[in-house]
Image (tube, rainbow, N blue to C red; front, side, top):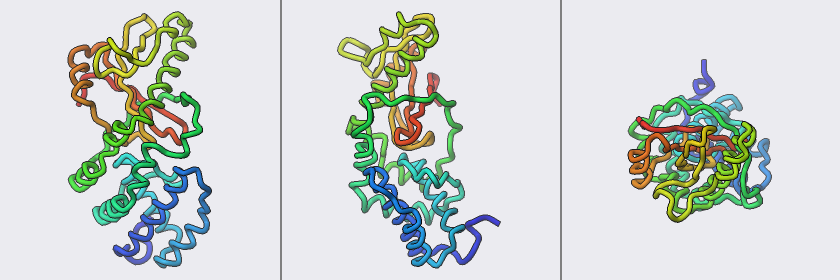
Length: 259
């Protein structure tokens, strides 16, 4: 028996309460404000009449939905992939009513005091997550990748972090001479490139950096210039996806051909 199947069914009103509470906690986290988890839990229990188990299960489903849309999640609620369209509807309604939250996701107060470059840990690329039609509608409505690209705050932090990581990687492998040449792209570099990097054999790397506060499943897309560059110089072209900047600060690499 799963946590979802314990007790009565979740009504639309119940979902509005649990999603609204989750979003309220996330807003506080992004603003570096304290979150009283126990008080939030008591409120949701009182209003919905649900026990801790079903509430925690539903919060995990909310984490899954937010991860796929491209928003950060509460760290004590790992994603559960059993969400349904009713929960998608509730999440969409809450996000539509919270423009300040969507702005905070690409320019969070919690990162204003961050160093110029955040230490990064490399991970393997995730397996593609299923994206059914209703989810795609929500993704298109909020388009968190476009919001981050237009704001540029996260993008600049991601680029600086990747430059620092790539230089450190080369130095750690005995090539400080190449490390000194790693830099952000500038005028005269190929259009669509964010970082000029190198392999250990000095092979150039034209790196595009995509940055998010969300987890590894957050969607991103290449611009037309990036697509053109990937086709013109596939051997040199790389994408580095920087994610979870409010957590460990992680990234993975992908290269052409893209599926």
